[in-house]
Length: 80
Image 1 (spheres, rainbow, N blue to C red):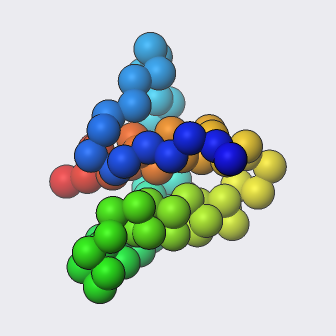
Image 2 (tube, rainbow, N blue to C red; image 1 turned 180 degrees about the vertical axis):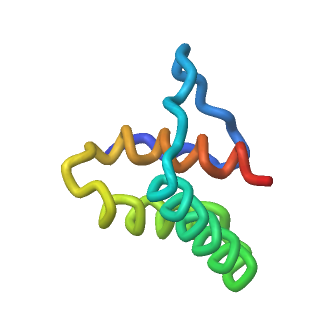
């Protein structure tokens, strides 16, 4: 089973993420909204994080789960 990352831990990849285009920004907003709604409803950070990863993978089904988890951690850590 892949290692899970708590949403409060920043995942450093050693490189800057590429600039987001409009579609990326829209996807990130949807993923962050789902994370926040799930966290508010269940108060379980792991469930909220896993739900955000599942949603993100619907947008990028070829992305390995570990990579999707890193992306989600970065989205959550950079929330406005």
